[in-house]
Image (cartoon, rainbow, N blue to C red; front, side, top):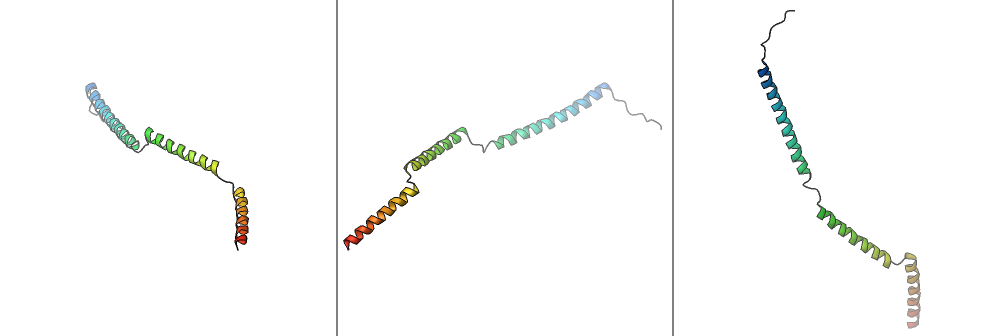
Length: 99
């Protein structure tokens, strides 16, 4: 097998070629980083702010207070039924007396 001779490259030509290659890689990396930065920024556009979260926190606390008030003033079902039975009996007695 006979070897063919190729054009010999000087050190300066090699340095220029490598420099062009590095510039291409640098530009590719820069464009990828810029693309990632843009997509990350777009991802944060719909993120709730601290003010939004504080507002929700206040609403939740308000709901908690209303639930606590409801529980404190709630009549137990058994107590309600007992009272209803007593009221029904009283109404029946009053109706029978009025007739």
